Amino acid sequence: MLPFKEKIKAEVNLEGFTLEEKKELIEKLEENIVAKINLVIMETLPDEDREEFFRISEKPHSVAIEKFLKSRIPDISDLIAKSANDIIKEFNKLREE
Image (tube, rainbow, N blue to C red):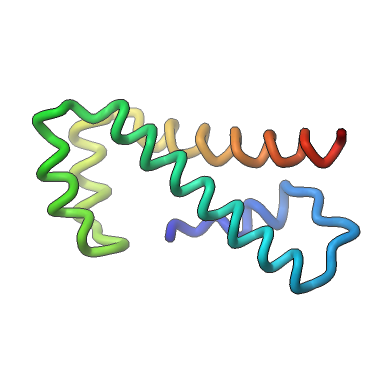
């Protein structure tokens, strides 16, 4: 997975949770961020590039994935950051209610 743990720890209100609950919440939030990023990629990536993306993405954390996405989706870094921020904001908003 992409390294979002530190961002989550820094920006999410985890007060009131046990250490085990915090660990689980961080894991689940990271999974949600990655799922949202994958959804954004599939919505943004042209149909003709999806098969190649799936082939390249069989190797996790591949530099080739990053290079491929940057060549096909120039603002991918912004989309990834926005996806992470959206999930974190949504969780914090739910905690406030």
